[in-house]
Amino acid sequence: MSTLEIDRVRKSYGSLEVLKEVSISIDTGDFLVLLGPSGCGKSTLLNMIAGLETISGGEIRIAGRVVNDLSPKDRDIAMVFQSYALYPTMTVSQNIQFGMKIRGVPKAERAKAVQAAADMLQITHLLERKPSQLSGGQRQRVAMGRAIVRQPRLFLFDEPLSNLDAKLRVDMRTEIKRLHARLGTTIVYVTHDQIEAMTLATRVAVMKGGVVQQLDEPQTVYDRPANVYVARFVGSPS
Ligand code: ADP
Ligand code: MG
Picture 1 (cartoon, rainbow, N blue to C red):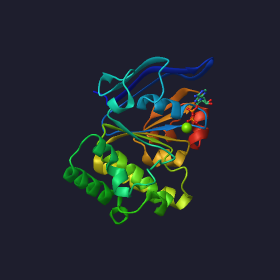
Picture 2 (picture 1 turned 180 degrees about the vertical axis):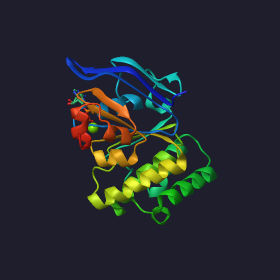
Picture 3 (picture 1 turned 90 degrees about the horizontal axis):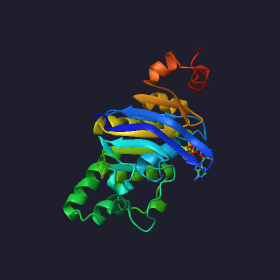
Picture 4 (picture 1 turned 135 degrees about the vertical axis):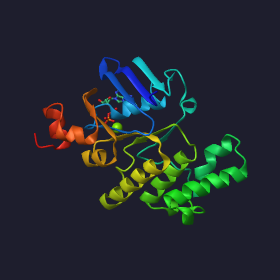
């Protein structure tokens, strides 16, 4: 069974059609990158998987269950955005465990989960700080920690590195790749950066104007682009 099936999904805002029958299916452990230029519909698609946008047509299934009408909290997902909205008055530790606290997870169990996530992200020394005392990269790690402790079936990332400087972007890319390997989790990751896509993905969906131009392994997209647009976008020779 596929972990995520996007089945002939459409989206319109009034007369503006932003997604035209998109179909993508990925398995457990896949790292799917939605790659394309600004405005091609990547965030809209991700938000529909998350339940933050309604679907104009088609079906989205997570672990075989149709989620079209489910609220975000019932979808077994966790999302990391470009702007990591941490709670400013809470410490890092409190930020990471806030969701668990609301769900009534006992304190000892929360502490254990925070410790494990902090170890993995190398932020143990930051747990008692406030977000204002962190760098951009550290904040992004905290945002990832918050997602990890939820142990979702599906992680959704929307351009999580685009606010960071170039050096940090490369470090965080490595970090995300390591996390994916270590957790064996399934990820859908939006970016307009072809290098990010090629280094992270197990599967890449190259998008243009609300249409998936090619869905393949990164090497295949590079070696055998489906059309001139894909070739130009990923920078392959043909
Ligand atoms: P991307 O993430 O690839 O940059 P988006 O999914 O944000 O693209 O946007 C795709 C298209 O949908 C764009 O043309 C954008 O202007 C339009 N769009 C996005 N959200 C809305 C909205 N709430 N109302 C109207 N148009 C929207
Ligand atoms: Mg976007």
